[in-house]
Amino acid sequence: MRLCFVSLLLCLALLLASTMVCKVVSEDEVLSKISEAEDAVAQAFRAVLDAEIAGSNVSDLVYRLNNATRLLADVKNAYNAYPEDLNEVMSKADQCVSIAQSVMDDAFIRKSSSQAEMQKAFWLTFAFSSVGCFVFIVILFFVWRRIKRSYVQKLLKMKPEVP
Amino acid sequence: MLSIEDYRSLFVIIGFLGILLFASPTLALLLHFPSGESFSELWVLGSSHMIENYPLNVKDGDVCNVSLGVSNHMGSLSYYVIKVKFRNQTEPLPDSEAGIESPLRALYEYQVVIPDGEDWETVLTFSVLNVSAFENRCVVGLLKINNSTFTVDKMTSWDVNRRGYYYQPFFELWIYDGNLGTFHFHNRFVNFWLNVTV
Image (cartoon, rainbow over all chains, first blue to last red; front, side):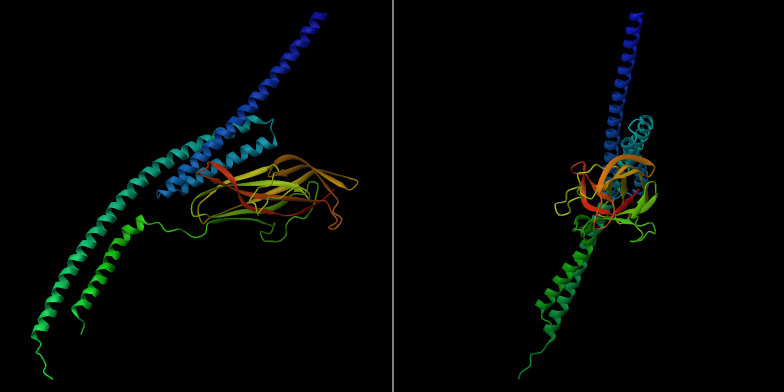
């Protein structure tokens, strides 16, 4: 009888201990997931910023990125307010990571295409400037020669005046 | 009549101006002049969406609203965090001169990415809960912000001059620094007083 009671106590203690261990692991997982979500959103932001600097229109990416930041804030607020309610936190953090990654992928594509377009536009502008400068100088040179010639002819036609 | 040297000088000037004119589209792509002063704005408005009607006298369970906004004039897309903190009369606010945030823990936060020249605004709903008073002290047990309830257990003493138990919700603006890869306090904060009654 005593042996049964001791065994039951041991089982209960073991069960309690395993539950506590599970909770600790679970909280660690949530913290790690929150950290992952923070990194993902930060990387997505940097990618969108790079795309914007490269000249892309990023308004739709910003809209999607803000969905991710809203989820991240919800996750952190929920974790601070109800540390025991972890499943919803994990699910939202997963959604946040997924959105942030998709935004980052799209931002990279946008950035590359913008860079290619910017390069093309640069060479086109450079060609316009070079050709424009060359043509302008040539025209100016001919105008100068003409004016110089007429000036000399005018001088030659002049008669000296004797006072 | 102009001399030939005068004509030559005139042509050199015209030539120089013409080259500058044709080269300007390319120069515009290559040269980047410094933009104006970059800054961010943070504001909190009362329930009427003006700088008035801020919640002041609040009882246990009263639901209060304020509008919170941020404006980006940093010259590019910016990633902000607005941290909501809650203090009693003796706890520190951020130090504006040193640019150091308050050491109090953030209860709630907003995260938002704002394009340059644009604003963001939201309504923050809050209420103080589990308020108790004894002798000349008052304790706020919980603070509910937008459906999230936080344990604060914050005590304050009776303010003899203003005749009340005063607390202060305040909002700090943090900005993401892409070079460092972290958020830092942007040296902007706003606050308002609450006189908590049981």
